[in-house]
Structure formats: C-alpha cells, structure tokens
Length: 361
Image 1 (cartoon, rainbow, N blue to C red):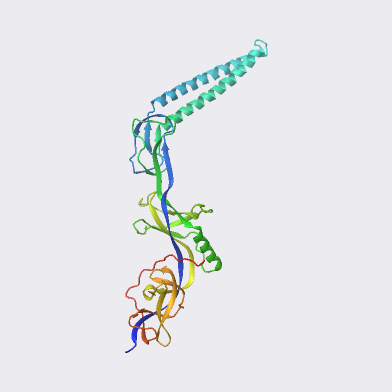
Image 2 (cartoon, helix red, strand yellow; image 1 turned 135 degrees about the vertical axis):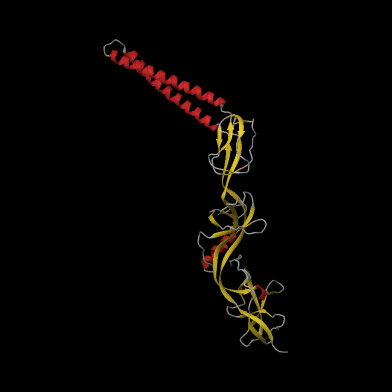
C-alpha cells in the first residue's frame, strides 16, 4: 500500500498564563443599617423598597410633635438663662462702683460675682439643651446615610421605634462597585511561590485583572481587579482570603451570589504546546501522539501533559519544540510506517482561552 497522507503541525513554544478558578461570594462595598435615633411613632415611609436612593434622601418620618415641644421648652429655658445672666451682670457692675466706698459689703460683692458665674454656666447648659433638642428634632426625619439599594422596611407606619434601643428601619447596600470575596488554599500559594523562586514561573503585575464566572456558567462582561490578599491563613480551613472588586453598573451582581473568579497569578514562559486533537489518551491517563521523523516515518510518542491552554495541551515531557505532530490521519498511519506529511491547514482559527496550569512543587 502507498504511504498514508497525514496532516502535521510542529509542536510550538508559547508563554502561557497561570490562571486559577476560585469560588467565592459577592458582597456589598458598603452596608448601612438605617436606625431610629430617637423614640417616637413612625408616621411615614417615604422611599420605594428595592430601589436606589441617594445619600440624604428622606426615608422615614417620625412624629415630631413631642420633640418640637421639647425644643420650645429648651428655647424658653435659654431665654430665661440669658435674662438671669443679664440681671446678675448688671448687679455686679452696680456693686463695683459701691464697694470702694463701703456702700456695699465685700461679702455682697463676692456673692454677686459668684452669681454671674453661676448664671453664665446655666446659660451654657441651656444652650446645650436647646442644641440637643434641635438635633433630636432633626432625627425625626430619617435620611439615607449612603447612596445605594434600599431594602425592605423593617417596620410599618404606626410602630413605636427607638424605645430603649435604636430600632432597625431598613438596610442600604452600595452595589456599584461590588466586592467578590474568595479563598485559595495555602498549599496552592506555596506551590506558586516556590515555582516563581525556582524560575519555573514568572510573576505578573500586582494590578492584574480578574474575570468572574456566574452561577449559570456565563462570564461576567466587565473585568475586575484584585484588591488584597490576607496575610494570615484560616486555621480551620487552611485557606487564604482574597478580595476582588468589579464594576456593577447594571446591578447584575447582588450580595450573597455564588460565583467563581478567574485570576492570573503567574506566567510560564517557553512551554511546549500541542493541539488537543493530536493527543490520544491511553489507559492510566498518559497521552500519546504520532510524530513524523526526518525520514517521514510515523513514530508513537508517549507524552505527559499539564492542563489545557485554549485548544492545546501544555506538554511537560516527551515532546520537543519543532517536532512534527500528526493532527489528521491517525487512523491511516501506523507507527513505524512511511507517511506523506502535509502542513495542517485548520478550517477556522479557534478562540484562544487561558486555563489553569498547576505548577510543579
């Protein structure tokens, strides 16, 4: 039989990114509990539940009538304290002109000075009481402390709030941007650092981007960035906590959602890759390829592979860069038989993706 025609492609060398897919949950950047700071009857809820609010928007109104009465009483006490101070100061001035001629005893003069000091202190106390009354009256109008998504109201109109404790009225969460908290095993991190130290891997920029995979398997459109990694390991789980931040203008990401993040943590340079379609798996998980030698004969080659990079395998042993690997025609070519090699021409170039590659310890 004539030699079989096969399509071949040289094994290539590439620089691949070490990417991890790590699980975690989405959390709000800021969460604010809106509470009643004074006691009273809740008159009105002025916001729409589940909608965005801005800082300073009115959310609830508490009955202000008792607080207004307290304010008016404090204002009257302040006016009375001012009048009393004026009276004591006038008397002191009068005594100053009489004490030198002994028309007023020194004891009376000293009493007048003390009365001025007492009246001045009472005036300050009255002013403070009025300020407190004004603050409490302002607290009757409950506003949003931050901008964000306002949740459901915890109380309804007519309820007595703030009696004995600061009653929780609602919760506001800032959803843009939003945090993604995830974990990675300390063993994995140690392996990465050891590989970097040995030169097997190269470090990436600290501000590298992250991609998010949602619960339904789709990829979130907007990339995020890694903010920090904890400096301690959880003793119970052996995991290190990390946090990423993602823009969320459409409010697609919500606190509590489970997701997975794809993070580039290192780079491996000059590794040999081979198309996945060229590799045949044998019993035990080993891979095999057909290689065309210089005499145009097919040779069976056992190889070891790492994880995939797009539509290719990363080869760790058994294959050198530049060797001609059979891509099409495996069934027609037999190991040791002569073949007619032709350059492989793919019909369409598949999109290249980056997948996780486990570093050697």
